[in-house]
Length: 310
Ligand SMILES: Nc1ncnc2c1ncn2[C@@H]1O[C@H](COP(=O)(O)OP(=O)(O)OP(=O)(O)O)[C@@H](O)[C@H]1O
Ligand SMILES: [Mg+2]
Image (cartoon, rainbow, N blue to C red; front, side, top):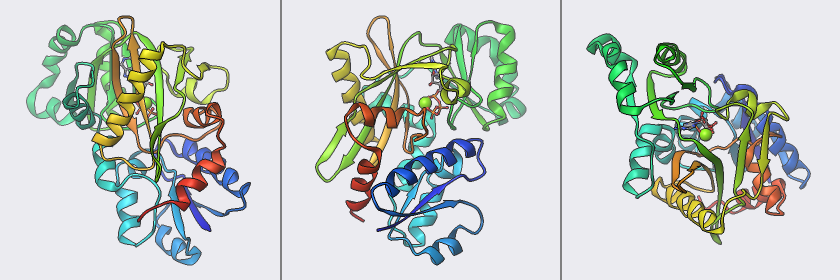
């Protein structure tokens, strides 16, 4: 089997994606698979035509890679591709939309205010910041409505920090999401789907040095402590697994996903987001969950790639 692993691109998560690409490519090569690593740019289609892969494995994070665009291009060009279809990706990528679907499915979603940058210019929404604080409370999290690796996300403790946090979030996207800061145990539930069905991997508990599981904590070894399986009760484990499977299905995702959740002191499980293309770097959550399940990264991807049903 000839596999084209797509990574890189021009998003803020380029480096992360290249690391994910290298890691999975090596794991597949260890299984004897012929792998070509392709850094995506304007030559993508000519390059793929030259390589003529049997299957394409996109590991591109950020906008183009996760909002369904890359997948749409690959579909139109006729490539057999691993992962969620573009229509599902588009919905999962936009946090306010995914939140709406989660809430409709009965999952707890933190109260959210969604403000496009345009509203500040056209509607004088700057006046609203005080009301937003009364509505959401402090501390709050301000983050772009889409994106990844917590880029542009910050915790606001005091009123004076809010404008700066908005500017930071707007530098990563045109729409900002404000939510109460949920104090609790952050976990990630990875889902694998193949012909035998949908299953969850051991839950990863994340204990970052910083208040948020931010970029530094994600990609600097030693800045985050992980516990796999998470140190939570069997009841919470069951409930969190159910939420991840429910969201995978409700969003119409395929093959692989990772749902990020926070469990508060009362045992409520709050939905943060679902990733259709979770990181696969040395410090990423997905490979840790695979290892904890006693599985091998190369075997997992090989199984998914050989069983694509399109
Ligand atoms: N409402 C919240 N309360 C507490 N912490 C939060 C909240 N929202 C986000 N966080 C923190 O910020 C991090 C990034 O948030 P989120 O997962 O929503 O965005 P992301 O940038 O898309 O992440 P990823 O790289 O996992 O795709 C989370 O891992 C968590 O630590
Ligand atoms: Mg996340």
